[in-house]
Length: 222
Length: 200
Figure 1 (cartoon, rainbow over the protein chains, first blue to last red):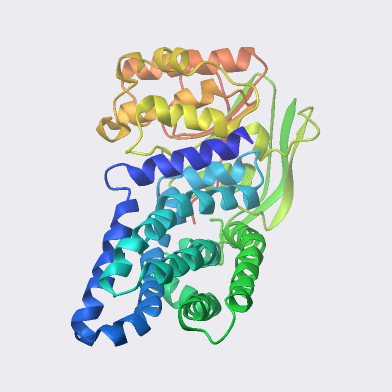
Figure 2: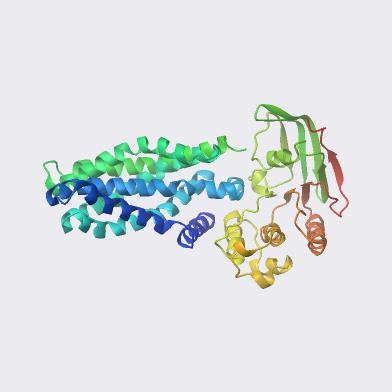
């Protein structure tokens, strides 16, 4: 356990320091959200209707932006070799890295959501619905994205490949995340149905992600 | 304790690097892996470290801890230093101590032992190549592992650093450790040589 706690602490520390990139994600999220009203125009009703989808897309792209570094940084400086050799199972080490990534890069997105909701003419109830679905859904984005990050690390310059691999995998999360937010705002569906499926997607990815990523890292050792 | 490899074949990128390689090293012994560039010295070390899968043959450690695998009982000191520039010298070493686990020592003491006692709070980004190497060597000291796999350990070290490292290796051997080192320069310590093939 000390090993995993140390890994989580280290990754968060690196992400929060200069050049770590945790805040870049929030700035990117902000930029994407601010651009939307300019593109769509000042139709407040339309913005409200599209708001949850825009926030979700922004969060998805922002989380993708930083996934690239999840394993490549450790691969480049040789840390990954030592992590593979370590006494902590590689699956758990992968899970710890993804958790640290979510804490450093995912949570700030959720915290920023209420402020960004204002820009999209969402009221308090709607914003909290979106924030809640993001809270439940972003772990799924990180843990499925980790599989792509592990595949990309073994292929050099896999950053673009990562986006192509990961975006299709995040479609279900996007569908049910936006559906749950819409249901909370306008109905007619009950909020519980898509929200439960979103929770299920996250739980599945928490289990599958670390195993798939560890298998990919082991297979790609060189 | 005895580390031995039998009939090891190594294929990388579809090209045979070496085949039918035998080696062995016992407690208190240094095996110096020598040979021209491309002869597979690094590949051999990575293979022992479990970072490459052999195409044939096997590597076994007799007399180690039964419930641990060979990589879990080894230190691998590669070309890359496994240091994070954003973390301080002390933080880098404490992380590896906590992550690698097992029998561990005191971080500050080990930093002093490799001559980095004055720089503990400096971010690793500001270290010179030699200092980075010294910090990697401190990792060997802070966590106790019986098998050391060293890839060009003395590159970038100054004369004083090389002497220091010879002392560190001697202590490790006196404690019953095994060292396998890939090297071009003489290690400055009595070693058995394993000569790798002609670098096809």
